[in-house]
Amino acid sequence: MAAVPRLSLHVPEPTVRPGGRPDFSHVGVAPAGEARRPPVDVDPAEIRDLAFSLIRVLDEKGDAVGPWAAALTPQQLRQGLRDMLLTRAYDARMVLSQRQGKTSFYIQCLGEEAIACAHRKALEPGDMCFPTYRQQGLLIAAGWPLVDMMCSVFSNEKDRLKGRQLAGLYSAKEAGFFSVSGNLGTQYPQAVGWAMASAIAGDTRIASAWIGDGSTAESDFHAALVFASVYRPPVILNVVNNQWAISSYQGIAGGESTKFAARAHGFGLPSLRVDGNDYLAVYAVSCWAEERARANLGPTLIEWITYRAGAHSTSDDPSKYRPKDEGAAWPLGDPVERLKLHLIRRGEWSEERDRQMRAEVDAEVLEAAREAESYGTLHEGPKPSSASMFEDVYKEMPRHLREQRQQLGV
Image (spheres, rainbow, N blue to C red):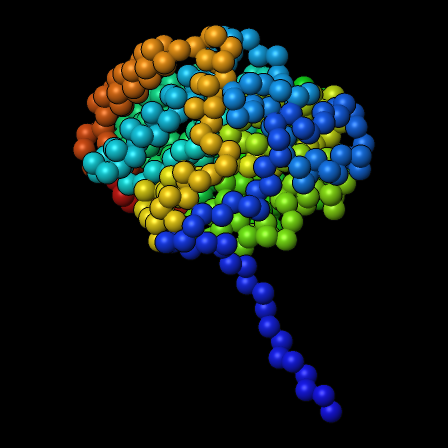
């Protein structure tokens, strides 16, 4: 009798480990301007190829080329650059604040600024974003006050969530920013449900759902796609593939065998794979998906290809699981520098104006930090009242909570 081979499992492994030579051959960087732009009412079956290609607008020279080249004015482009610079400066200040003991924890979006900042410009007031913890650019690009965001990080007396959330898990309904959840994946079905409710009510507002490459392995992701495919609500399904889910590379979540955008095919949904470090490409594709959703043509899944240039959080050391020089080898570059180069190529920017804007942004962030710190930080200054822990839990406080509050004397 022939010997039967022992069974085994395949465990995806990163192409390189610390000390090795960075390898991004799996990204598949297509030439800028090569991807076609279909009409918004296209049959999803006709654009399956766009889940495997890469939509890009800015070429290596900084020129906007191809059918996705958005007709953005110089002022819109300069504002986009400022939004990204402000997001980056804000992140840097909050990381510094954490190192100084002013807050417990912080997650930055270094290298991913274009995705949230450009996407927000494609939405309308009243639309609702259901973000993860790395989309602070959605708030900043919407002009939301930095002081309000910082107070949430510091958990001080002005914190609108009264210090009951992890630092950086913002909530701003007025800005179309749903409360960030530390339980990864939950926001995806919530966004689909919100969009369904908007459609049921005959409203005009759409939803924008956000998830990372690692969290697509959660059941919430697939449940959301089921409802999205069946009921076709007005929602944009964003997948931010920044190559790493904490210390696990994207292959552990399924990125080794296929593209995350291709997961939409099994649900009959249109999907596109986009250069997430290209501000113009992000804006153009976001507008395409927004128009589709608002015209009752249903959801669109977008995989944004980017790179998490920094640590996962202030408690992470990425040098333990990836080469220290990996970021420098990232083939899609820095979103800030790419938009800056494009503006210079158009004659709408200069190195001197860039230095001036950076100084202005740094000063704005520093001023906001000083004001926010005046309301207290994690260990110093005023704090929300302990009585607030009983509030905002139920619409009407039940008897057992009233009794507990009385027992505590608050």
